[in-house]
Image 1 (cartoon, rainbow, N blue to C red):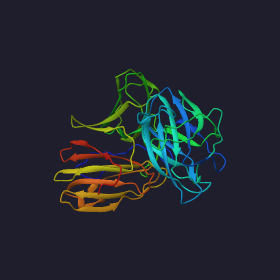
Image 2 (cartoon, helix red, strand yellow):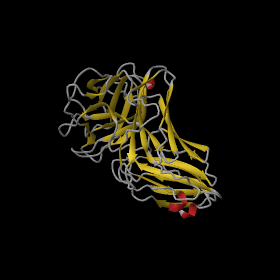
Image 3 (tube, rainbow, N blue to C red):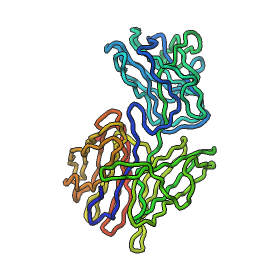
Image 4 (cartoon, rainbow, N blue to C red):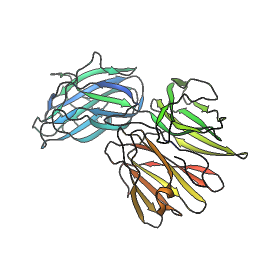
Length: 417
């Protein structure tokens, strides 16, 4: 869908696509143990269950999920911990993340997402589930443990264990390693690519990609692209031609190094799509899209970032200016995003976007979808209709002169207004 406005250059905006159900599609598996028979070891206030793995490489944008459940709707409270140490000597300094979890009930409960958006440097990690009551209703399902478990290069699955007793002040400080070792507990750890939400080439447009290794070690990065194939927003793998004519798979970046890559930008017809950056924690990326017309050049920048469930975008539709928005549904199912506009006057305009299919996108000028925003300034708030839904957004501010710039987008934990 084009931004139809006399102020807007001929451009179609697409954001990157990254599916998320229980854990992200297009994700790199860090370590995974498949679910097995219904039921599993019970947990009560004197116990906690754990799985552990060791990685020699870093992972970014990590999601951790597990098949945990309760046999009673009256006992569904548990706490998940991710630590770098368990047992004697574990302290609060060992804690990476924790979450209070409401467990689903029944033998065939779905996998529960425990953590997301984590950056994990090399090290050993313990995923621990604990509960405060003595019912024994809470459990972690058995897995059909492969030999070995499914792991990424550089990752070793160290097995499972039970802690007894639990230190109530800090549950990970438990006595692990002595006693019963259950079968493999079913869980998944995945690392999702960062999304480059906008890629264009041809028809006066060119995209430049910048990738920087902010770490003190050699890093590996892969860029992959997807091209829009129809007005419905469908995409396919895109072997995007680059000026540098290099492979974008497993690129090696020295400590502190930056690599620049350029689309050719010579085609008469516009082609558009999105990109994904697959790299370890500490590797950052962005795209600069350049509009060249009448001897002048205009640039806008879009950062590579993880999708979110609530996103704020400032907008400006004042005289001679119009804001263009593109949205991609990064979830595993169709989404109808709620939309609220907070105008500078203090008025809030509420509505929603048309349903967006899984891995689908839509783009529009803001006044075309929300006429109340014409001639106004303010903030657009978009929120997913489901707890696990995520999406990507890019915004551009176009001037009647043909100049444009990108707008910042802000991922927030909950709806702001």
